[in-house]
Image 1: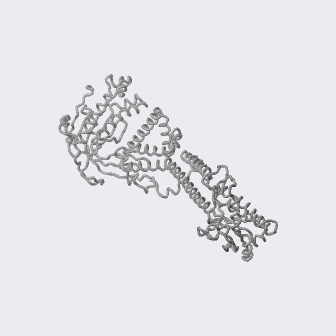
Image 2: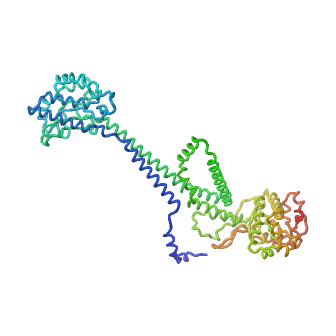
Length: 616
């Protein structure tokens, strides 16, 4: 056994370190990386093409028109102040500015023309602003529009043709246009005196709306000193713009969240398909094998049937394409279930997770086949030790006492067959063991050891008490009689199957074997059957273990089989076995002797099952 201090002296091989450093990327890693890159590229492209379509069109704000009109009105006002223009010209410029920046259009106009109702900007307050309130108040009295000018301006516009159907000004707006500029506001140290067009809505001052809902426009053709002294100011209501922008922002946020959630789901699906599902399946299979290692073969067989069924289903689907709409529906189904993503994988070499899963099942199947029924508990115990370091401690392996029927099968003239067949003797033995194992499992038996020409087979008897302790003696319970019947019949079936096998008949006609063993040579077996207790466990070291049965009764079973040569028969069974059989089967067994065998405390009755190879 390896001691703890020996582990401290072990050195890591430098060649092994180089091998680990040079390890290439796994196929599953490359596949997952490729799929992730594709998904991210698609997500970025979706965002690049989708986000611009969800944003508000900023060209509908008309900032150029508002700023340009403010300059026109300011210049008309300054010309009137300087005596180079008339007040009527200024007032008409002011009225034109307000009229063309109110959403009065009915919408019945050519699509190629942009009208005020098509845009977000809506003037709702206009007046004068400056640092000195008294100066602004004095200038406001001069800048306000007279009511008679408003009336004349409306009369002059009647009958005028325009590309847009602007509609009629509301009476509240007409009243406000000709009203006195008496609304005074202080905003950021600037005095504002003017008139509001939204007084009916309770908005008298730009400050009554939120900061983001107001957009100021002032003339640009002035000096900084003039700006601080006084200037015209126009306030636009952009609540519709902010509302659409908020809706667009929420839509963009929802769209981005949807894309990210979709990418996350697809990436999670890739990881689940390529990594998590195979790992979970492996964990489930290991849990099943921990409970019953014999299930490894069944799981592998079921997986093979599932793969074959899927292959046949795919082949049938290709042959039966059906109408065009059905093919389109199947492709859409494959796309939604992401099966198209993995179709390339079917033609590629299996991924590491699948190889690992198959390797686990093969190793479990090989362990079960190699250790046999006696090693089932050993395998289950080793797998159930979660804290184990992987080193097998033979001294802590489970052992238990069982009651069983033990049979010994020997191949006749085996040494001669080895000399004649040479390397082909392995196939010769495999053909025989294939028949033996198949019939054993059909009759609830299990093979244990194969020493070349001899095979040890076992039928466990049901116990009255389930106790694993070696020192406890438990008697066989109900059902032992049925097990004895199956043991006797199974060996009889094996005897008949070997004689009727066409493959083994070819070996019987081998010219060298016939020359050495006679022309009447046929592949034959002899059988010995005995019942008794045995210790089921494993023996060996951390380098090699064998699971078997240890008991004087095992030696008795070998001695019974060896007695077939003394009595010149093929099949012998002891009294403990025959006495458990049903009466009808006991009648087929003939008592030929009563002997004392080493290891038995009492004489044993010897029964022969009369079998004549010449009848087959």
